[in-house]
Image (cartoon, rainbow, N blue to C red):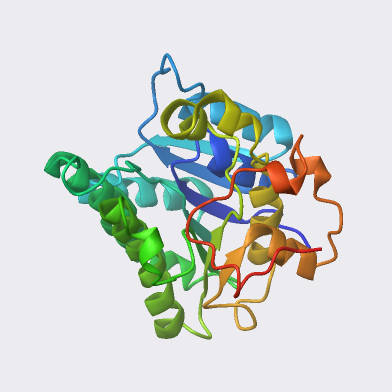
Length: 280
């Protein structure tokens, strides 16, 4: 498997899961376009598109940082055009950018509702749409969304329905595009079984304890690497869970991704246990 010279367009990607995925690809010599808003350092969130580009180059790839708000049609179109002008095309589109707020109906302000739906759903749709003409010219194109399986259990909706629907929008777009472009583009979704060590987990969701009892972003990077190396005709329309996918491809040691045993790790949302049993 190799992603050498593949051009990857990723929304977000200045830190966390997105950065881990493209750095893994960069080890093969991939070319990465980081389309994100983070041009200036944040006091609580380390990393910008420029520091991410430096890490990608250090890992062995090429990088093009592009300031892009994926809520803006003009921004996304310009970012895609810059990617094609700079690297000559696009082989892989990764929808990584996302907004989260786990509040109930009463406590969710409409401006926050709009933000989640503009970034998670509409942003994913628009980035994929504008990448499509270029993906179709690639010999093994992929669209990958960091979004969950579509499990309609009410427990995933109760208390956070605005976020759940915004996140499920990303997955529904993958389901529809997989069918629409079957045989032309591999379209899949990837989601972690446990919480992942990201700034969002530490600063927004669960604090230091949840952060420590999470797996490293490298588990998502390794799983994404498997998907993006698959033949587009043979692997599409899937909702993959990181450790299940890796177990199917021979990984037996998951201790390298966490400092705690599995029983003490923080579970993520949206993972139906009956459909995705925990790897032994």
